[in-house]
Length: 123
Image 1 (cartoon, one colour):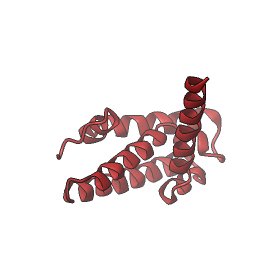
Image 2 (cartoon, one colour):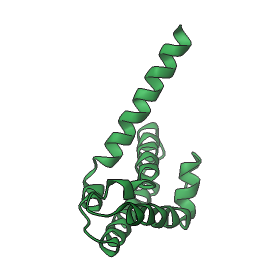
Image 3 (tube, helix red, strand yellow):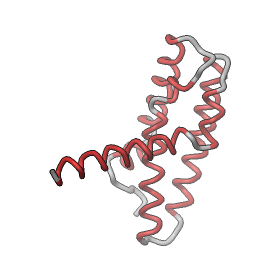
Image 4 (spheres, helix red, strand yellow):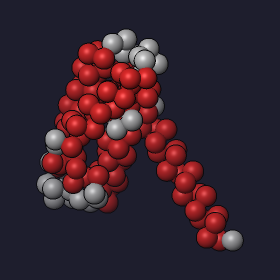
């Protein structure tokens, strides 16, 4: 019984963090994109913001609070993988293309790939 309660609470917590990731200011522009090219630009802008956030954290003190910030950033990066599904103004084919583009951008950044594997390269 305790295991099932823990499992359900973990799933709800994970869902909450995914919701927070999609609710962030950076990604709200992606959902309103009216073209594939516009969505790509928004993905690029979000990736740049996440890179800046990552670099700022790398320059900060190594402590538990910043470790949590890295974890939060990894959740936001992970949620970006499916950002195309949030593009209400695009057809399904373009939504998948936006998600694939975001995935490629994430995978081309070695620091993001490491962070998604719970490793911080700069520490």
